Length: 383
Image 1 (cartoon, rainbow, N blue to C red):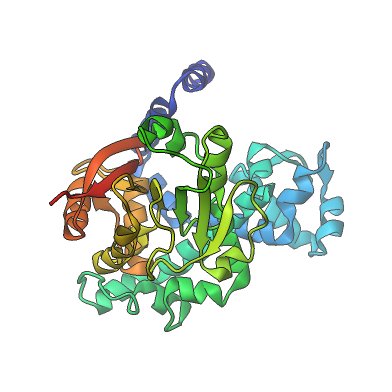
Image 2: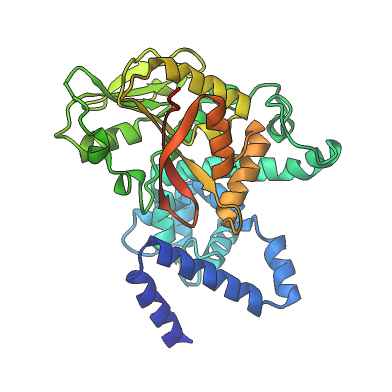
């Protein structure tokens, strides 16, 4: 078995992202095939366990405590730093080790591993907090919500699982604006680096064509861009290209943003007319999947009057395949339904939505095939 594990690790180390994901999914399928029914029952029973324990560990600072130590720590050292009861901290550490969140190297002796160091990083800790709020609360409310609504489509943004789970009448993003810590964590998660990003497949320079990229001319408008991770990514990747790079988002989001070199920061609500005229690219990253078709049309129709003959809208979002969608993409679809009464879309659904706005897909670039993350290059339909 050890030799097989070594071979799989070697295979994964030389695989591209698609190959690596295929290995992971194959191993998961293999696990399910060798499980007994009892194994499966216990796996489902404890499925939320790692997330819950990791959230508690983050609150206590356990990941940071272990990650910053170059040596293993004794239980009493960890207890002293956390202020928790010895018996409680021991139980938590033991459970963390059972989920490989940390390493247990002896009786009451623990050390960090790669997973510990991952969750000790602020951006990943932020993701942990958002995941807990979105998964545990929403997941707990989803079955009753759907039963109460007769398993009909969720179409009203003020009557979703989110309102039930968080006991609020507010829309999800409006609610987050009242929760500064949650909003900040959500914005931080937008900066999590993927193994492959959209700029690795989208031919940014070639797509400029004969467009005259003067210094004062808008090049890239990052609509709803949060902390500006994509704006700064464009500026760093293509420093030789002139033109304005503009980050737009609500003031509540932008107040957490520090100055970004080479990037203009502009407060903007995308449900109002786009103030930047004639940009080469208007970029929407994981925005439209948060909204119903009607709201998507409102967003798009606010961009269209600002476009000139060279302008293109770049929609960076999931494009679900007609069959065989990956579980991460399908669960993202369920999440969008639960939070926003929205959805992930197939290519046909994107085409139908865009056509209603007088737009069409010119090109499509998929950069994470298994998860269906893609960039749709969208242009006006010529009349």
